[in-house]
Length: 334
Ligand SMILES: NC(=O)c1ccc[n+]([C@@H]2O[C@H](COP(=O)([O-])OP(=O)(O)OC[C@H]3O[C@@H](n4cnc5c(N)ncnc54)[C@H](O)[C@@H]3O)[C@@H](O)[C@H]2O)c1
Image 1 (cartoon, rainbow, N blue to C red):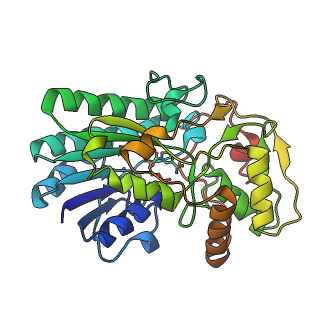
Image 2 (cartoon, rainbow, N blue to C red):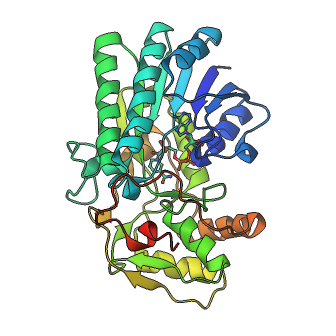
């Protein structure tokens, strides 16, 4: 049994990870400031601390009071598209917690640090994205994630902090925040469809993604703490099923039994058109198995969405730049 810190454990992916680690009988310390997560996601068998990880003193105290063996760092304001218009707040939510956690980990002899990075660090490169490529991010979210990866590699070289960097692809499923107007495209569509509004597609809808079911992803994510073969590695994680946004939208409408048709709006600046990556390394080093097709995963998500119901969207972090921002965001039309 290990003492494990999960950051972002009231969020979507973090709460699935907490459940998986508790099922394996580990002791889980769960930290979240609830800025983007939900109290209902907090597993009662974890020890919960409401802490803003940007606060260095609180992070140090947390590490001194708990003998942490493994850190899984997932907390962040995870909004890639919005980061173009909210660069300051999103950068702060990604880079400051990372620095605080890294320093505290070295000072308290943490054995392994697993970081939830992102495919956004690839930017636009030859597909599928391969772990051997250099980082080449094209938006503030990706730039901040690339900074964190760099720091982790530096802490490995300078202080011997063992790590795995995981780059998940578009993760979706039950417990995802479907009420934030700025992020999580499948959830935004579902929340609109439940309110009788057509889903919005930016651009021509021919963008390609590999949407990945949360349970499949988080089982492999959890494995990173315990598989030596994943030490000091960068690993893409997600589904091999590549779909266009048009196809994904059709599958969502079908899963919800809706007759609505999508509406098309101007493409978003700096949106990477094609983003999917290799899966071989995750299969070899994290024992990854893709168990849900997109159709099957969407059925699970829709069943949950029907239970939690729809709401008027929340415009979470305020936009810092309005110039060229999508009209539906500026005029709060979501
Ligand atoms: N969902 C995806 O498709 C995806 C893909 C690639 C990478 N990621 C990364 O995985 C991680 C989890 O994403 P998610 O989709 O579960 O997002 P989420 O918003 O559901 O979870 C993030 C959690 O972090 C918490 N948080 C944010 N800032 C914090 C702070 N300063 N201190 C403490 N807690 C804070 C939020 O309250 C939230 O509960 C993020 O780092 C994200 O960048 C997500």
